[in-house]
Amino acid sequence: MPTTFLTKEGYQKLADELEYLRTEKRAEVANRLHEAMEGGELIENAEYEAAKNEQAFVEGRIQELEMILASARVIDEKNKKDKSGIIQVGSTVTISEDGAGPEKYTIVGAAEANPREGKISNESPIGRTILNHRVGEELLVEAPGGTFKVKVIKVE
Image 1 (spheres, one colour):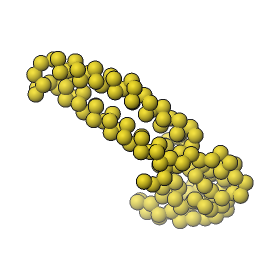
Image 2 (cartoon, rainbow, N blue to C red):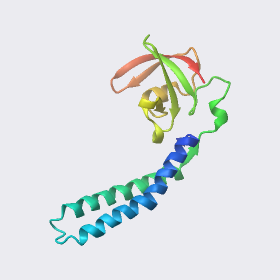
Image 3 (tube, rainbow, N blue to C red):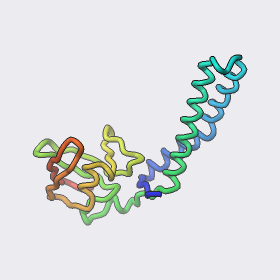
């Protein structure tokens, strides 16, 4: 099982979601199933089908979260403040793409990546390319849409 990198906050968020799904959501779906089964003919009962689908989704998500958390490696806070300037999982970096304006990202594991919040995966094209590099380096990023150049401006 591959290692999943998570921040403390990301780990806690996934652990909280798992707890919610195991306790509240499972019970809620079980009640929906029970009510739908009492609703008569199961073959033509759309509510029963919807509840069964939701149950399958919840159980699948529980298994996914259990696997992620079991293989998780929480990013060490000292790595985030590493003064060596080398980009690591947990680093916040400012880059510029092909001369465009600066963009700021935090490198996180795939499980908590959210580009809208400025969190990119260490497995993404940019994340994978800039890992283990330093300020001032210009790097070629190979992405599905083509190759482009980024310059590392700042590492926090």
